[in-house]
Length: 80
Image (tube, rainbow, N blue to C red):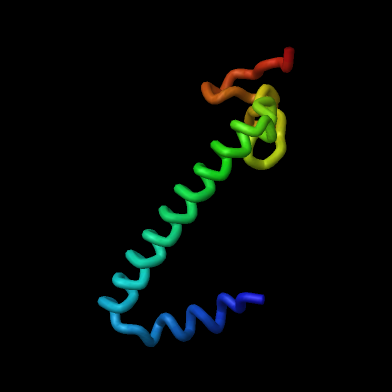
């Protein structure tokens, strides 16, 4: 398991330029992973394995909302 408190203590000892360089490196890794994920999703979609009614977290796309009965404008709404 990743212990964030210990990792933060270690990172606090790093010089700022090293922190900035590592951040840039990790951003590149994240972008590469996202591109690979999108490629996999494309192939799964081509194979009919993507359910278009669900989002990436398995929740129904048509049921999105704030969950509190109040729309983005602050007005109440009713589920249809």
